[in-house]
Length: 250
Image (cartoon, rainbow, N blue to C red; front, side, top):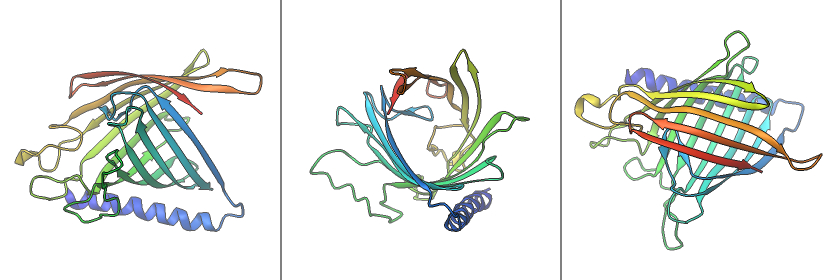
């Protein structure tokens, strides 16, 4: 099982690197996009990472199917919800699949705090490296499927061994009266070290950790400007939690 997971991570990394090589051969120069979301709180895959409003900025360079970018989340109360990520992705097979490698990092806010961002030692690093492969859905099969695995970093058991926690999510989107509705259901399989009493990254046992929907639409402010807004209802059955999140994009 562990060898299969390592092969999965290696496959994703290979696809992303191959995509970057293809992007270098594109005749166009690519484009840079940037923006920010203002969210009432930060909930990711069924886990709450902030108890108050957050600003989530992002910048991305894309060329063909290849994209590389940075994304962050910063709580307005300055005490929780900080995150700074780097990622690279490659979309292929007529936009059906997307492979992504993400470097997650959760800094501690505060002027005097040393977050050791450049510490990549296995025993002390605060980084988590994740590989994902997503099927984006098609006209004939309009269900998206995401498989994500932590393959390196701060996802270790008590013995310092890599847990390689898994997360799988199914999604389905449709439109109702100009409102886009996205349904999702995410779960974590049995962790590799569950028989040793270890807890996985998403929960103590196998089960659903992220279920709900997001409704989004654009509200017209002027004839040439509209404001994207969204509202989400998110349940974590394993943790017995329920979250309601509102967001505005700029």
